[in-house]
Image 1 (spheres, rainbow, N blue to C red):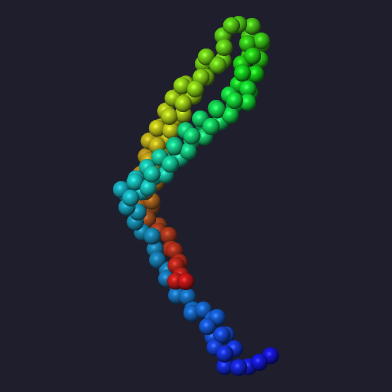
Image 2 (cartoon, rainbow, N blue to C red; image 1 turned 120 degrees about the vertical axis):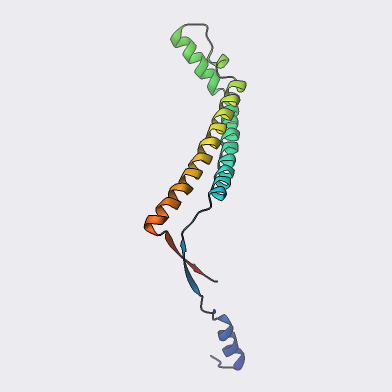
Length: 135
């Protein structure tokens, strides 16, 4: 155990400066910022859902699960109506795109409504108190 000057300086440099804490209140959410943010998030989720739907459909078709299900339903019903004529790739892709567009519209509207409700509630309740530190 050596108590040299270099060891003492090394110990001093390892100490961190005390972090400052700041407490702020969130008392207003800008309406257009909330709308833009919710639109962007909804757009990303819609793209992910369309891609995931296409990938799942492709996997189900390539593994033969849908053709086995189609054959099973044709055996049960006893008709010549094929399930694959109803759920082909164009129908699945079109349905996924329509659902994605509806999700974009609903997600953007919910973001706008949430910002309006928050701004109304802040007037009565005072908002959120947040703590920040400088590290």
